[in-house]
Image (cartoon, rainbow, N blue to C red):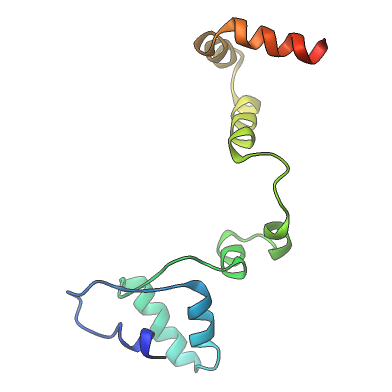
Length: 114
């Protein structure tokens, strides 16, 4: 577990960056005391995490692993716009349509109701 041990240097050096998968492997057979030390290194910035694996991301976000295994049915931008539209007021809707152009909205609506 040399990569995690190398983080025990003075605070002036850049933190050790561990990928989630590597951290999982490094801590697999470690004692609770050693895992707690690594957790403190994460908190104090001596170790930082790079890319997380799905299991770790699910635990941090408090969602099921299965939720991360599903492919989104629509692009993220569409989901964000939809979420905003649902919570926005009528006046905010009008402002957006005016900003983007009434003619473009009308063309899309005409295509849909065809």
